[in-house]
Each structure stands twice: as C-alpha cells, then as structure tokens.
Length: 526
Image 1 (cartoon, rainbow, N blue to C red):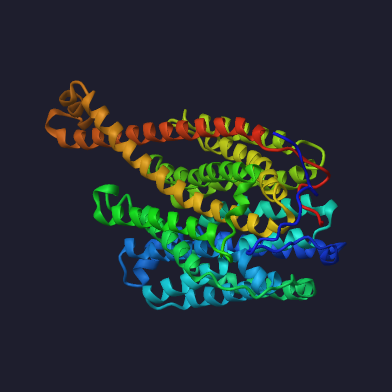
Image 2: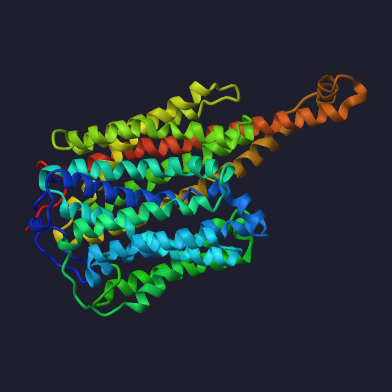
C-alpha cells in the first residue's frame, strides 16, 4: 500500500470530531512527563476496573446475599456502560471540551468507586457500577486524545509508549490485585483504592490542562443514534455474558438478544451514516488504513485478553493452582511489557512500524503455538516462558498500531479515530473472552466423550486403580478424574492452536497497512 506522511490529509471537520492538533496546547520539559503520567494513570485506572472485580464475585455474592451468577452483573454492568460511552467521547469532547470532560469523568469515577464500596445490596452495587462505567468509558480514548494534544511532535511516540504500557499491564494486574485485596481487607477496597488516585489525577489534570481546553460547539444531540448504540451494545454484551449458561442458541432469550443486536446494529449504522449530526462519525472507516488497523487490533487484542482469562482457568481446573498462583503466572506478561514499551516508542522514529508489528506478532504467534504443546506436567518456569514472550511482543504490536490508527486519518478525525479504536478494543475483549471460553468448555466435553469411547478394558483398569477388585468405585473416580484432566488439556492445546493460526495470518497482514513516514506517527497540525 502507499505511504502516508504524518501531515497528510486535509482538514475535513466532521460533525462529531474536533482537531486535537494545536501547537499552543503543547507542554514541554518535566511538566510534560507529569502530564503524560497523569493521563496514563487515568487510563490505567479505568482499564484496571474491567478485571479487578472478576475474582471477587463469590465474595460479593456472599456479602450481599446474592447468587454467584447474579453477582456477575457487577462486572457486566460496568462493561456495558463503559462500552456505550467510549464511542461518545469524540462528541462529548467537541460539545463540552476535552479537558472538562476528562476532569469530570475522573472525579465521577472516584465518587462512584466509593459508592460501589459502600453498597449494601446488589442492586445498589449494579447501579453504581453502571455510573462508574459511564465515567470510565471516556477516560481511555480521552486520555489518548489529550496526550496527542499536549505532546510535541518529537515526544509523541514516547508519550504514547507510556500510555500504551498501561493498556498491556492493567488486564494483568487487575486479577492479581483484586485477589490480594479480596483475601485481605475485603472486596470493597477494590473500589476504595480508586478514590485517592482519582483525586490526585483530577487535581493535576485541571492544573496542567485547563488552559489547554479544546474549542466547543453546540451541536444537536443525536438521541436516536445514542439509543440505537446502547441497544445493540447492551444486547450483545448480555448475550455473550449469559450465552454459555443458557446453552447459547437453544435458549429463546439468547436468540432474541442476537436478533435485537443485529437489528440495532444495522439501524445504528444506517442512521449514523445519514444523520447530519451523528453521535459517532462512521466516516472514519472510509480510510482503508484505519479500517484494516482496526480489524487487526480487534483480533490481536481479543486473543491477548482471552489468553489472560483462559490460562488461569486451565491452571486452576487442571493443574491445581490456586487463584493467587494462577495470577502470578499471568503477571509475567507485564515484566517485558514495562521494559519494551519505552524501547518500542524510541524505535518508532527509526524503524518501519510495520516491521515492529510483524516482529511482535511473530513472537506472540510462536508463544501461542508453544502453548498448544502444554502438558499436565508443565513446570512453573515452562509456564511463564510464553508469558515473557507475550510481554515482549505486545508492546511491539500495540504501540505502532495505535499510532497508525490515528495517523492515517485527517487531523480533524483524530478524536473519532481514537474513540472508535478504543471502543473496538474493549468490545473485542468481551467478544473473545466469551467465544474462547465457550469453545474451550465445549471442546473439553467433546474430547471427554471421545476419550471415553476409546477406553479399553476399563473394568480391569478401575480395579487396578482402586487397589483391588472390591474397590472399583474408587478406581472409577480416579479414572474419571484422569479422563477429565486429559480432555481439558486437549481442549486447551486445541484452543491455543486455533488462536495461534489466527495470529500468524494477522502477522502477515500488517504489511498491507500504509507505511507511516516522518519522525512521529501521530498527526501534526495543519
């Protein structure tokens, strides 16, 4: 494909976009480092709360007198609210000002985090988690938008590298921190810890960025577009969260949710494409480079997030790991992630970003295919080797793809591009988690049935395992456990094989992206 320079494309101001490029808004010197750190921390805080409560569901259910499956709404409510709000970030920033929106969302996130911890019933918790998610949704894309606004041209790659590091680390740190807090002071503190962070970030955000506010414009509110957006996102999220428990499409509820999601999505696209003031400007997808970058992002981040979910499940169900030790294994993703993020950011101005992405995805593909050879006798060292590889490869993919996604669109569409790519990243995590875990459970059942069908001389085997012919029941239990373990192991290998093949194909596809020329992949001013 053709090359794209960072200053390319004319100013085509969209109805839901604002141009973040403004030399007067740039920050220099040590204060730039502080400002970038604050924006990265707000992004980390919002992403952390996507996973920090996952391990606390049984404790939440017990303390609030709810069933475990009911307590999962504490997760779903946040995810749905966040997903609905992410695409609205561009419109909110243009209507009220990017700095003002970010500042209020940070304060709101801290306030509703405290309310979540103080909840005395599941209903209260779900309501406050929804409000927390509505505040957290804009934090991810808005922090990126403001970062592009304040960072000088020569510093944007390093700034985006620090910001991207939080995206890699947060899903890994969340379950570990959540488990430690739940086993220690209790699950409410998983929310309380957000309060001081939010207050500090809000203070520095206003002090450093208030004078760098974006221009605002009073445009009509697209109520229909917002309602359609909420409809299809809520329908598909609830469907994915409950699909496995409801046996998927044998359930009328799941079928109804799917129909609602499809009709809502099609109606949303048609409405937004024809409305004069759409809440989400879909014209950004007319850029082939952006459309392809978004597609690659969806599949790779989905594979990354699904592995974070699948590995602990397998370790606990098949190898007898505790939740804490399973979290330790996953945590090694972050070791190289911290080291590689600034290195990759520095290389962005010297190396073709596509070469960095290809190298990173090749490492991830190798690690994923290596996981397809796992056995029940894996040592701790053998388990963390692919985690190191993921930590090495993800920054090499993620930082360039985020840069490319905002560099291939006109400057006036940067805010829309950043909002939508973050939205698709969040949705891909939910999609991939539901699909991969469901496929893993179903494949385990299928492999178990096949293993049982291939057993020979089961009676004598049970007698031998039980210690005598009179203790066949004990032998049956041992044999059944062995078959279960092997079926789960086979399903794990097969699932990672499928994921590995997908990553291999996507590694080749990065060369179809346009090459970003210039010292920075982030858009410059007009």
